[in-house]
Length: 638
Image (cartoon, rainbow, N blue to C red; front, side, top):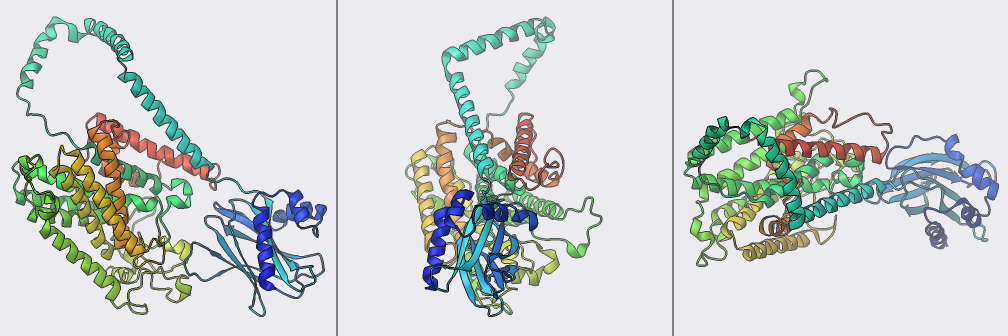
């Protein structure tokens, strides 16, 4: 009977839905009465005032049970194997028809699990699953049924409809699509001969008038013009054009990184995942590492073909890696306006530090074993069809050895107080059995070698899993898999260079790598967020995370290469410009994050719309800066 009552209660909740008006609520719950519905449900939030924050809803718990005090527990359905957390305690009803009421704020980011227990006996009274809406007002009615059976019913009704928090994202997306259509239409007009000729005549007539009346059109300047033509003969031959798809991909990853680092409108899917799984924010860093690998091979090959010695190139690699690490340490330890920073609290790992170490290892590996690609090999059919892999067997052997080290340390290193091979978040996860085991071996190595005070103090797992130990997502052990990711990017660069001008062969290999890495991810994860052998996890930089994001990266190149470089249907605008100045944009957006116009005081700090507007404007400003620098041919390279 208890199960039947619970089933009927859930049916009533689902049947009413999240937008049920008060009239239907009165019909569904006639015991309240029309006047009670208006007076008791709509005005209770004034009596029991709770300041709601972003991604929260108000829940009023009405306890009509006499003699039974209730403890309401809450949990997010996104929190894997988590302990229930106490939401609020509700005293028993004093008189029939006058319930005791308590209020609490519940998260609206994911579905919620509510469990009501008898406070004294600690027995479960009922359990509900419900998806609350942002800034909605809800009532949870707990009462005895009136069907002749002494059972308890728990029902949720909607007092005030929630807002559509995703509407600003949809509007921003439609505006972006409209801009793309407008620009595409303009390009189409310019491609038409009649329109192009009309524009050219208008511009040329004005230019002719300007030259006639300017110093450039005077006879005294003729010598200068002739001199310029003479100097032009001494210019070196035109260099091989860059692959725009590589710079465009880098720009896409960078702009997404800037947007999510600035807050992403404070939406949960633009923040890093609490532990296992993927969000938009989890995509950008590995893509940047991947395309860095591609750039390493393409640029290194070009430098070696120009006759640069390997020793000189090694010095350049070491210096650039050193600069990346130093700049990274400065960026992740801001102390402006906060007073001097203690050396005891300096964070050592970080994004640029990870890039610096990864760049050094992968570039030196390629420098030691790789040979310059012969020009003829790019077009001769006699070259072996798998030369991009066969020629790199020493590098592949080294990478497999590195991955074996990661697997060995992750699954076999004893961690004090934690199960061997633990991959969980700790905290309240895994039913609270291992609260101080966040990250398993990865966290233990960082804390052992770097110290608790020199790693990240606010990991994403703290939000949902309430972890209390420090954990760094850019830690030591995860660097191994970032090296693997960069090497897979090198593989993409080799495909682009070894099979130059053979579009079909390039696309076939991109497709093969995309499918191969995707199948590895399927096998490792069992197509599950938490139940696989090695779940996708950005904090750990698990191997399944690397194979999944590499598969996505090959797919993106599969789309970009023919569109941007082969057919020329898209120039990569506007992402191409930040991609050409990636270090400057990344460092700049970190340093000037709190300065106008990248940030300003909001009228409503709990509004997704205002945060989204601010973050889009800030990101667009960096795109504009990159465009201006590109036009002025200003590039910051280290």
